[in-house]
Amino acid sequence: AGASAVVIFNQGNTPDREGLIIGTLAPDTVNIPVVGASFADGSALSQPGSTARVRVLPSEQRTNVNVIAEMPGDNTDNVVMAGAHLDSVVQGPGINDNGSGSAALLETALQMAKVKPVNTVRFAWWGDEEGGLVGSTAYVDGLSQAERDRIALYMNYDMIGSPNYILMTYDADESTFTAPVTVPPGSEAIEKLYEGFYTSRNVPYDDTAFNGRSDYQAFIEAGIPSGGLFTGAEGIKTVAQAGIWGGTAGAQYDPCYHLACDTFANNADAALDVNSDLVAYAMLTYAFSTESVNG
Ligand code: PHE
Ligand code: ZN
Ligand code: ZN
Ligand code: ZN
Image 1: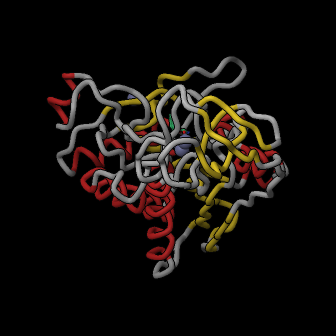
Image 2: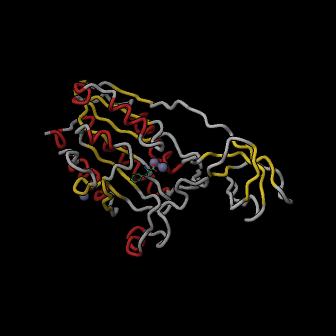
Image 3: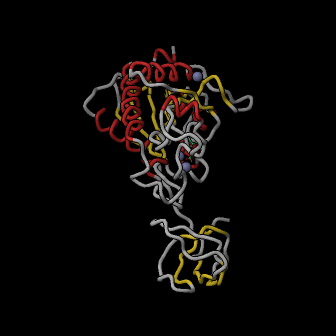
């Protein structure tokens, strides 16, 4: 399912153009009825009921990589980790999902280079989150128990600048994990740090469930205290939320979620601004002490 096809031409008076049709197609040149297709410029390929001739590219295997950057602190046995997925879905460029988290993390890493931390800081830009948390899972699975034990905590940043945002922290008290997997002790302390920062900036915040929809999953399963930020994806903003954060009630937090329109225009600067500061604040805080999390 989900083979993509490059359109080579279509019937009628629409000029030849290239775009993506998402659907299940045989790997051959075929005539298919057009039920609708979208292009980066937003224009429709053709009217429903017309016929397009498409060339279906053969499926291919691609290698994805994680990018890991570490700065040793005085204590190399206490590692503070933060991660953001670097890939996007094939349908779009993935600027909010997840250029937002990746960029905030990159700027934090660049600024952290000016600091000599007590703890060791490690940044991860995950490959292939969208394929099913592939990069982060492979990473954690590949660690020895001794290496896992050195990781004090993990912070995850996936979609932190949604255009119709609300500000949320992963809720340590609400998870959908099934026993024996639970949110590790210490995770509440990370959530509290985030909440305290929002309070200090006078901005409202809410919770979102730990439900395994992003790269923290493998860390939680390994018993590593985790937290993270989120500004909403396909969910619909309520009237009450629009009253608190502004924006448009009845519309998705990210109307371009997993679509071609997730471009540079698809960000709320206000959300990205406060969250970028928080990404840096949390890393800097834990670079000097993780006592509030690990005791
Ligand atoms: N991981 C989801 C994606 O990349 C987004 C998401 C993050 C959803 C956090 C819920 C909670 O599409
Ligand atoms: Zn996504
Ligand atoms: Zn994502
Ligand atoms: Zn909470």
